[in-house]
Image (cartoon, rainbow, N blue to C red; front, side):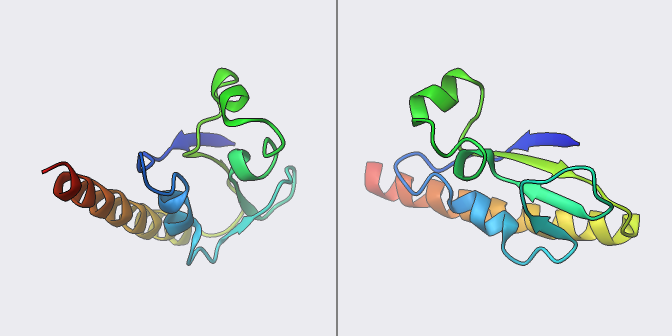
Length: 106
């Protein structure tokens, strides 16, 4: 298992980058389970820790952009290619939000 954080778009939907990352994943299943042979991805802020307030999650180190991966037995090249494409989708959303913020702030 590993975890990482995606930047979120302050003032915008804080989960937009997460949705962009998760949308289109085929090898990773969005689920709250461990110990299987399949690759899984979880977004604790909307899954395992959704009942907590945003402030309580932040105090516990659970950011809005935190994702947890459990890597299964799928082919390494397939997993890496899929994660690369997912990062590109998330980056596009983050960049677009930053451009919108610049226009609004100008």
